[in-house]
Amino acid sequence: MASRRTMLLLVFSGLAMAVIVSSSSSAMAQQLDVGFYSKTCPKVEEIVREEMIRILAAAPTLAGPLLRLHFHDCFVRSKGPYWAVQLGRRDGRISIANETKQLPPPTANITQLIQMFTAKGLDLKDLVVLSGGHTLGTAHCSAFSDRLYNFTGADNAGDVDPALDRSYLSRLRSRCVSLDDNTTLAEMDPGSFLAFDASYYRLVAKRRGLFHSDSSLLADAFTASYVLRQATGLYAAEFFKDFAESMVKMGAVGVLTGGQGEIRKKCYVIN
Image 1 (cartoon, rainbow, N blue to C red):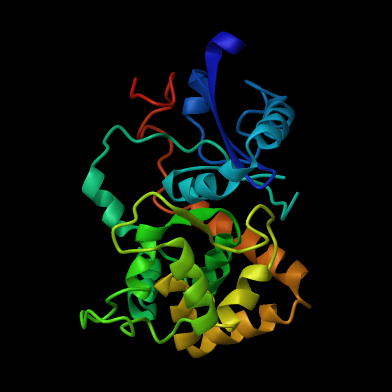
Image 2: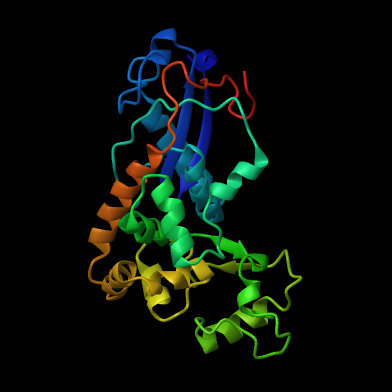
């Protein structure tokens, strides 16, 4: 069986994300299905889970960056929310760098975020829930340093993002010393960046969201209400449930099935 599949292994804070590539002609004809590999690779989840535990133990900081890859046709499982994942997405045969502009940038305001999510069939709840994924991982200073220096172009020490808590701003400035810093990393959820939890919302409620897109969640009545509810720390289970539902919705965005795309023999190159 090993000769008939290739494994792309990803992680999400103990959640195994995997695409198992099979050359089975019968599988090629199917659409998305939770049991897509039940015949060609019945132990797929066990294999992936064990491998993910090993990888996370060796490199836990991979969790955050790899979660972002869900925007690029990944599948998510397990130590966090659980949900049944429909498998069988095909890989595309075309890769165009500037198409990444469809991804919400960290500089986006609430209007831009709503437009981008709506264009993909995702709503306000998906927006605020999926933003909670920023509880994991780190970001380069260059993704948010414009909030710390020369925010409006006035070119003076006080020209900072007024939406950012001042004490948090000072802490970030001590880490990211200039607009030219492209290498230093900062935790997106300080003190909890390796754990999937709802602490992200407490930061946003205190105006300590790292990105402008995080802060913008307070600019809409619905998203702000969700942020403040989760910030109480009383509804983490609700967030886990919501996150699972929104991830399933995202997994159905732009899906290729059947004769569209291909199931790659090597995940990193077209057949």
